[in-house]
Image 1: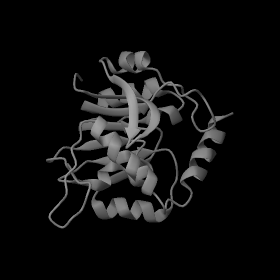
Image 2: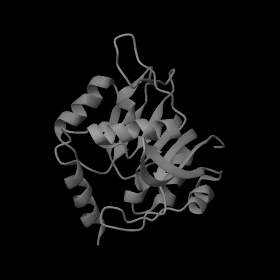
Image 3: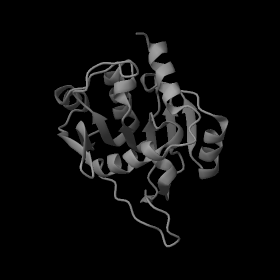
Image 4: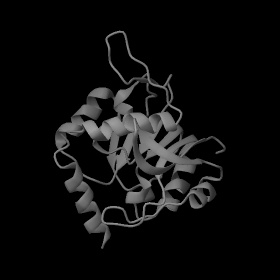
Length: 196
């Protein structure tokens, strides 16, 4: 398997990005593990996350970043992802005032964010340690949710481990079974770290 094969698999998985229900449902649960608290707005928009003016860099947020469910975003909030998605997905980011760059997390040279969010991303990358190094330079706080101990397969060239993530992040995350209702989806790693 090559990086191109992994990227093709991932692109095919997301297809035209029209039916994103399951991906966004999982994101709501990832967010909770990342210490984000959702609420319902008076006009019944749920989930909504209030960033209170914080700027966020979402590494690997793709076509339907959690930032699209946020209010009071800092001016520089943006998503970076190496895949190319349908043009309508970028128009949605523009309408929400969220920047977007088609770039690998390994190549990020951004700084000055309040937080970096990484969720369900690193198992899809070539060099997850480099991405975390870049994230640590970009923000004061990292919120992370990743699958661990899943093995290597097409589209998932990294088998992440808690010990490695702790080492790269310079802190301790939590490993636990991820569940939605009564369904067990495997072991996950999550942390909110702010030692940067």
